Image 1 (cartoon, rainbow, N blue to C red):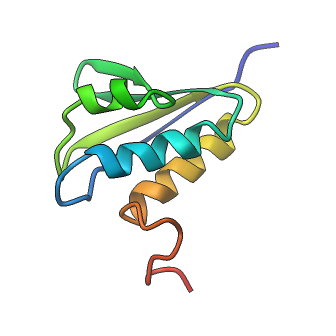
Image 2 (tube, rainbow, N blue to C red; image 1 turned 30 degrees about the vertical axis):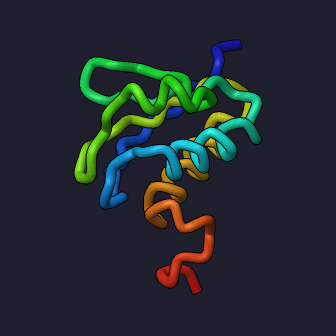
Length: 98
């Protein structure tokens, strides 16, 4: 049985890019899943469960990043992380959500 791999592209909307605060939120969210989760920016792939690796990306506002997850809960992981990016890392209390 092949392992499920899910990928989706999203955009960094945070004014200061993927800096310490959103990186910490992303790590906290990623660690809720058992799947291996990577963030790909340009030619660099890092572990979404490692804050140090995320900070080395240098993804600025407007950067396109690919979320890649492999494992049993890969689809839910990617969906949740894309939602986090879309909410501008608002911890689920974005005014866009009703």
